[in-house]
Length: 411
Image 1: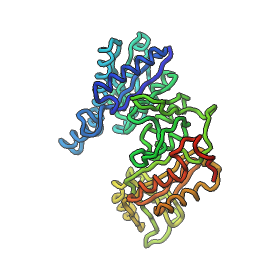
Image 2 (image 1 turned 90 degrees about the horizontal axis):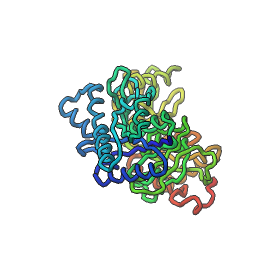
Image 3 (image 1 turned 180 degrees about the vertical axis):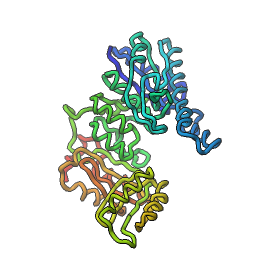
Image 4 (image 1 turned 135 degrees about the horizontal axis):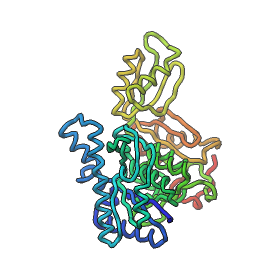
């Protein structure tokens, strides 16, 4: 049996017309000789009746200290509602369909409520229904512990569910349907000239996702990459979308940069020795203190007598207070944003950083801090400069033009 997994985002399920489009896509897959397994997200966005954020607000209004276990039990309802409605839509169209919660589909997780990790997938129950010819609609974003407690997988969890099932079932591909036409060179709300990338490799999309691109969750990409499952990202309305697969055999352009991403709402923290002076353990003490308090850091520049990094702005005051209590001098700069360029083509290519700096300075954007890897160059800028920075980098690397419309991008 040729299996594929089709994942549908919540904004693709909110209306009867959209759910009818899901039926069309399922029929197309069946006509092509495939047996699809569907994974669905909660319908709509914050404010919509069954959106995840709506459930969160409902719980916190009643009791602000809702226990994580109970919160997960509540949050799982959004995807279950979607699964039942989509299964009913398929039945109404004459197809044999049924809905399963994540735990019923074999998603076994750890006990880290609200951000659980998948320990393993036990697909036997799911396979029994598939082998009987049924179309199974699985509620994404959730699983169950060994003890049967319902857990949720954090933001992007439905992508992770879909990737894990595709890997466990040996599916030929994973199709992710969303409200945009694939992965784009930048957020089109920030860079109107952004275009859809037709082919990417796993490493590029995983890095773009980690740096702020929200089309596919990096956990889902990691799972697909490990098992070699091709991923297609496309709009519910149609179009070729983006194919994510191994680079072997791909026809690729020679650009240094594939896309521009951004993360708003960051704060920069600079830590220097306090009155007691520098200590050989300073770097360890700084980052261990933050880790023990559950504060994640990024864009790290460390030296023996100075540590610079960024945290989410909501954690900035608490992070500064923790470090001051440890005896360090702390300088805090709020209202920052991280802007990054990502691409396999920058590896080993001189001059890419120079072009990044040139592009930002030419747009009047000051750089507060930088960090780089083989795939990424990231710059910290003021929040007010975010849009100008993203647009400047997109233009500097010629990303609005299709590959065959642009000269070879050499630095």
